[in-house]
Image 1 (spheres, rainbow, N blue to C red):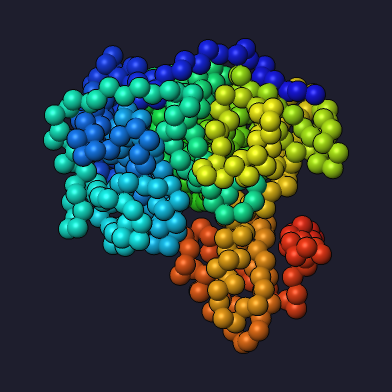
Image 2: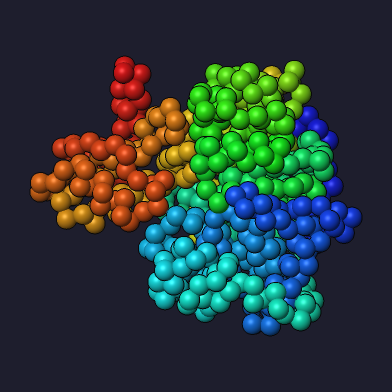
Length: 523
């Protein structure tokens, strides 16, 4: 059975992204496009379009061209949008990097993506320069000024003459975020101009977004959710986006209040804080009309508590990095929202629920793996045809690795995962990556990592380790913490005599996961 959207298909133009998102820029010339929340520094639509053109010309004058890769290693600031759209304007590829990555993690992504240039902020420059030295990056830029890097503003002193670049929207890659997919280490997800344009058209076809909306840009732009749904879709819709470089609850609440934010795209841990934290009562959030939660499942009780406390609509959607990202949305009509559901298919999107054992299609209210097909599905994983073929079949169906079901009205519920991924506060953590780090510790002979349920984070990484010499759990967790970004830290650790494995040596992760869930239910 194929599930489809209740809305008709929409027309998707095969246009380059920068040209597409700027189609309102001239008419909205003096309207704020991007505002730096902490300082109030504002870039209007006219300034954004102008700076993008100048930066694109400046990059071209330095020899950056179609197919070259530009790494953005920065928190959310208004200049992020300028860099992203300037690179896109030239047919270049943006590889967006978690700004909390260690030198080792950054170096891996720079080398794997083949990045030519890198931009960061002064606070992260030391790590950026060290990683650049260990890669083929030719020049490091910095937003602002700092010794050892070229000011990004220098690009704006260009002639403004952007070369004509022929972009094949359906084939040419614009974004290369990294995802663990269904298994293994992070992989570059090749997203085309058409993928991102399609998702903007599909989501706004499901629900048009008024130009009057003020968005909060607190979710990181390096992540597909922030990159497409907030940054690019916000500009395309003519919204004002207020950026925050990091999440701090009181600063977040003050920003919502001071800028009269009307629409917030969030993740479940932030929704939980809005529902339960006492400090929320100190702020006037009356302008907030809608909260959209994504990146991880949002519990029905938390959604209801948040909606009742703030007097606004709370709903959730569903998507993946590999689907640019949105595939399912919920209506903003309170009468049509089903709390706990991820919504219905958006236009131009087909879904199936497939039995993981037999491969047979299932019907309504039957649980199986969610498969998706549509114009938002990625081109593939960079330099990894095997992983691509494992995830997207010959008929174009993307196998999500998520277990779910759809009710009689086509509302989807995500209830489990086939894939090994851990979702910590909506951010991906690959068990294989942490296991590789653990196995470099001289006292560990074997290791396995699984998700452990956690009310605030959703899931936290838990390690099972087999020792060959004495070491404390605290020493092991500190060892890992020094080598990975904060969201990947091991937060629970258990010493065991052996790791359950198949005859071929593959970790029986499901055995460990089921044991952990049983303990959590008993507790």
